[in-house]
Amino acid sequence: MSNINHPIFYAVVMLIAGLGIPIMAALNAGLGAKLENPMFASTILFVVAIVAALISLLIFQGIPTPNFSAQIPLHFYLGGLFVVFYVLTITWIAPKFGIGNAVAFVLLGQLISMATIDHFHLMNAQHHPITLQRISGLALMAVGVFLAVRRI
Image 1 (cartoon, one colour):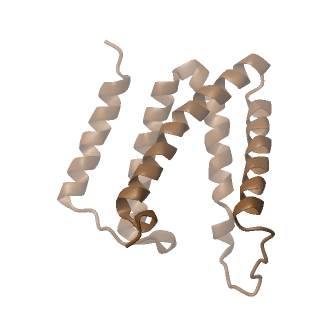
Image 2: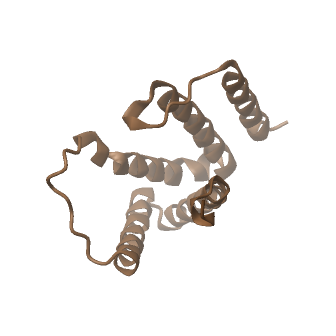
């Protein structure tokens, strides 16, 4: 197995991606506060993101040739709606609630969602059933979130 196809490589890349989420939230929340317009700040974020995504696409793959003959269910195209919801809400709520609080509850939501998706094999995800060990881990994570955001 090559290093780029190794689970440890995947874990490190996703850890780095996770490190970026609070940074993105803080930057965009700050921009929204400075502009006094969280929706405009979110729009700016997406313009920057689409330019970066297009540049990455062209550099690494060139101009794509889409396979329109493939039977792709409509719901597979709707992932961007969740990104928009996340960016709009984090940009609006984080300055009022705190970056740490907002991201901690996003993390808890992600954990609940991932366990549900994996358990029920939704959207063709790999099946990882909810076991007592997994429930215990999720419960510990939930307690950790609440302890991390609790102000004494």
